[in-house]
Amino acid sequence: MGKTIGVLALQGDFIEHEAMLQQVGANTKQIRLPADLEGLDGLIIPGGESTTIGKIATEYGLIEPLREFAATKPTWGTCAGMIFLAKELGQHAQPILGLMDIRVNRNAFGRQIDSFETDLSVRGFEETPYHAVFIRAPLVEQVLSDDVAILAQLDDGRIVAAQQDHLLATAFHPELTDDLRLHRYFYDMVSAHSNQEKNDEQG
Ligand code: GLN
Image (tube, rainbow, N blue to C red; front, side, top):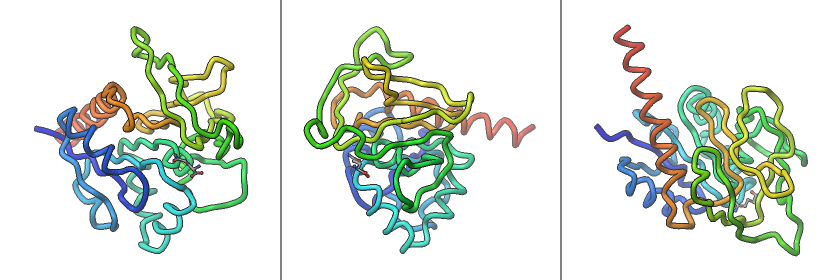
């Protein structure tokens, strides 16, 4: 049976993520309120503006429910969503979930090249470069534990995609291309996790 993946729909490009998820076979659901998280197998936190997403999430009482969900269920943050997942930010405080052992630097590329596209080699998909769209993107400045696997780096070594168990983070926007590989990868993570949970229950 298809798994259901929620997309946090407070602000940003959640529609594009939904369309990609449906193409890889997922049922999708837009998440705006704590009750919407019920029954989800996984969650995407999209790009947008992390301070705005954090502010609305706080107003809607979503911070703690999201933190609880993402503490155990597959969750993927893209761009602003990656900022939202991070344990530490280089800058001043803003509401974040603080779950993934990465230190993230917002708007890390400065003004001149704050948006650009480049071909990346992504771990697991090395056979064809991954065309990545960066929009006022953050960077993973530092990995804070050995549990974090680096999935992609720019030519100069700066980290732009990482995974820690059930948590996935990309600084770029896979939902703005027609390359389905990362959405398929996340869907596989969600399926494996949900099947594992069922096995554990049947124990
Ligand atoms: N610059 C945004 C932030 O700091 C992220 C940009 C994006 O998600 N495309 O939240």
